[in-house]
Every structure is written in structure tokens, then in C-alpha cells.
Length: 70
Image (cartoon, rainbow, N blue to C red; front, top):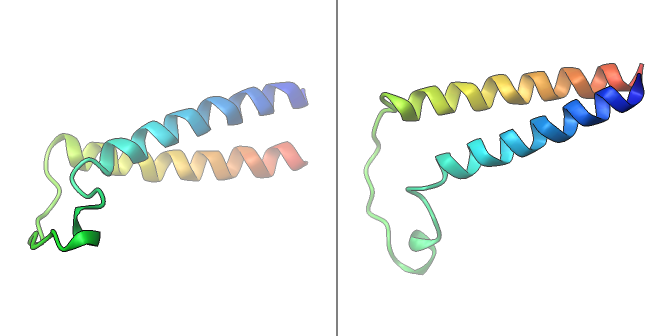
């Protein structure tokens, strides 16, 4: 049974990394070397869906991690 939890954790971690990388498209390291000047904008469309999927994924990953300890 513990193998199933590990497999689920592995799949969730890959999905979370992909979702986080999709969100980080517009940011990057440009502001580190003087770039930037971006203004605040609200999330719309796909960006908003990816944001909420990331939050849901983190919650599910946390629950699976706690359940794997039990």
C-alpha cells in the first residue's frame, strides 16, 4: 500500500513542477539585472486556471504526504 502513495506523490510532484514553471514564464531573472518595470496585472483566463490548479495540487500533495505517513 505504501508503494501506491509513493507513486502518487511522484506523479503529483512532476505535475506541480510543470504548473509552477508555467506560471513563472513572465517573471524570469530580468528584474535581477535592472530589467523589470512590469506593472501589477490581474490573472485572467488560462493563467488563473493554472494558478488555482497549482494551489489545489499543493493541497492534494500535502494530504497524500500526510496519508503516506499513517
